Length: 364
Image 1 (cartoon, rainbow, N blue to C red):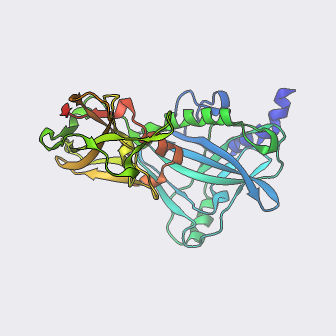
Image 2 (image 1 turned 60 degrees about the horizontal axis):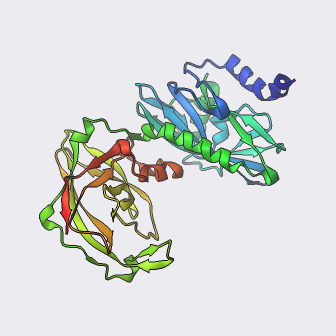
């Protein structure tokens, strides 16, 4: 009986597979849609959330498109007419188009080898489930065409198009159509961990010799009490503002390689990528009214200079020797704006595997 209940969900996918010639390996779905290993071209469902669609319910879905092959992936896609390029195997859902953009309805997409893209889709929910439902998302790998959007869409409709299917997503619905928070948080964390290497290349031991940090000991001034009240730290246990000592370390980020270094940063909260190896010294966070991702670029055999503030509790015993570390997240793409919000947060957190350390300096 259980298999019969799943028949309405699986039947469209079986029919689609029968009529489409697909030359790409499909993921091996595991529990709640996790893949045991990534194949060449992958669609990974990341985040789901219910909203209101005129006359019906709606489901917003964020996906990652992963090119795990050694070849560049090129295909046509859209920023508005999603129903022309995406589908689902759940009969109670249909792909929703955004407001048509005549001059931007078809775009050429390029994903280099071992890279990824992030996309957001909307679905009309024709029949809202009581407890949950299962679905997959299919993306048509349409060829590149020249001409107007109308001509391109007509050519895509005529051609025999390969379709790549996502992992199986199981939505566990609670009261008032709210998703199970704990289950979704765990699921999203697993997906982010899996896709991170496709947006930021992990550093090897050899890489850590190419990119080095150097602090000029002679330019470090002695610690002094923070004079700016706005920069004082809030002591959470005692619920009061605490006085701290601070100084600034001028540090050089050296690109000793023959290739351009592009790494992830933020225009305001970039200090979150730095840390120290001493629990008594911290790199402070900044209060940001406006914050967005950006790419920092260092040409081959060149150096970039940053000034890192260091704070210490006022009763810290001095002098002390410390190092400053940078979680260096190399960007596989020139545009960091395409990154998912959760991926941005993950890349800001210091990652031990991507950490490079400065020389040791003495703080007085």
